[in-house]
Length: 579
Image (cartoon, rainbow, N blue to C red):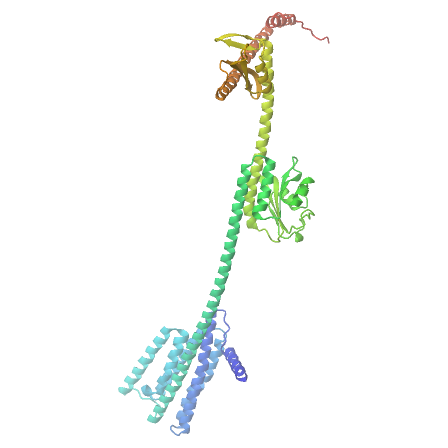
């Protein structure tokens, strides 16, 4: 445990040393890597200093030469630490360019002073090229490699031509020790660095892979949950749409308004599983929403009391009736508009939908649930469409009922008019009917017994004709009422020489009687129209004659003469009230 604590503290201290303050994540990563290289660079030049001191202690080189050689590591130890401190502030790339450039120039200068193209300093170029490739770019490392090769062959050529000679020659033994030591230091540092970078990259990759795997797993679970929730929601929506469609079909098929309302609330409660469903309709003044149908027992008690709510009152139904906008109460205990109803004690959430027709609110569909949070805005979208269809069905049923009442009233009035008109026909013509024997007409002054029965009962009547002697049936009498707009205006009597009359014959006679009644009505209407036209003509003539004179006496005389002539010699008296 102590060892692990020591390692943790060392790792924490290293992290503090190499951490970089940068807003960009990539810049921070690059700065951290550069600072690690600066620490390794400090270790490399420190190891080179130890090699120089060891060569001097072994007596392999003079103190002056060793002292000049120690100038280079003595400079790079503080220089690397300064670069590290500057890079921690976030300016990584400019500091890296300066470090690589100074390092390149310093190593080249050391090669010029110590040994020329044979100098062990050429080994140190490996480190500089590695830093350039890691921190700057692969192209930078490639250019630097080319520069080092050109520099090496330049020194080689100059020395071969005798133009240049190293100022500080290095003995062979020192040169060999330097090559071995520098190569070992650089290789160990470079291999260690690459191993560290590879292992760290592998750890980072594995960590990112684990994180990605965890994220993918979380996303998979989240997607599964979303798919499951969406599937459940789609199933619920599909069931709602199917139920709404069934309710709409049932509503449009019914014609009686009350039966429609009762069927709708029952279907909605059954298909959607609501605790209570009620339909309120506006009264004639639009001041109250009156409960017309309910599905629950409590709703039935409310119906028996004539339950109603004032429009705009502090209640959900009253608010919706006034605004014409749907309203949801997800928790009735926390809503100030909810009106507590002792007939519905189990209500926990409520939704009220306006019943609208052509922009006019004719009522409210009120649904209540025993569960809190039972309704959503998506439910409003589905159920409002159903509510609009219910409202249209209610309005159509109302209009149909009103039309039927109007039609019945018209039929009653027109039937009375028809009856009175045919009474007038019988009164003015003073005959009951016509009898046709061998196609010769004769008046029928009295109604036969079977005709009276058919007129009284409004149905066909069959009576057998018996022989006077033995009572044998020798024929049949058939009386069929002639009906016009529900009114019996006469009877069609037929005498058959057969003891029985087939039902098909009776039906044919009934159809003929109906058409005969219609033909007689048309004839009566035509005769009445002609008579009225004649009256209008005579009135017009009298009016025209009255305008031919401007003298009062003459006008009165003309009026009396014309009325006497028009009314068949009636005595005419015209009086003017005294002033």
